[in-house]
Image (tube, rainbow, N blue to C red; front, top):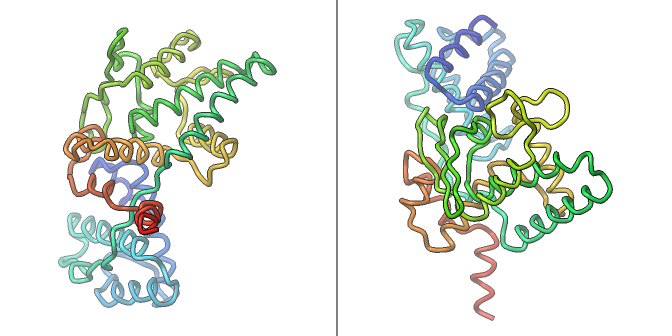
Length: 303
């Protein structure tokens, strides 16, 4: 436990995102359990060998039959663990250095197609109408939920960036607007221009946003009026997914949908990457990777 706590502290010192830290710790716990069952001893940095890493990789592939993305993610967690042990002088060589990642074909991110976006838009509008008629006390909450979802779809913000939005980060006028993202990935700032739909959604929320001491844009309406949590935002999106008949709706699916819409409008990858806050264009290129629906559309052209 002390080792995991020290490793967690190291990850925070490296300014890793909270989701990354949680993922690494969960993957390391999975490996630790396997290590204990396989070697009949507890995991510690000095006991980790290249043979263990190779055997674990085979276990994930052959016994658990994990996808390449899962195997590579868990190997990345082990690599980070080994790097921490090297940095702190607990080991003198990296036992993960010669273990190669599993090659995989790049999968397209999950996004909403035009029909799904239409269903979501309709569900949001219907929800607003019904809440105003039947539940007027809840309407402000539903107005916030609608604006938040539409804002995500038109800005491509990460969940952490949406949560951290403050009133002072927003510049709005009749014909244009912008958002200064203060806490992007890797602590990088970027400015995002807001299109008509994003400005409209934000203005409609700000008109009814409760007066509160909180500087966060997205605040709770009932109870203590503080900034929304990531879990609360995910619940909002899950409710809309159910009402729109979608399999799933998450902040990342909204982000991917924003990017895919830009690519479909022939916006250059450099501009898409800048809007999303990507440090590497290879990440942005995922949005030109065809998904199953793109391939189905392609072969239908032969008919």
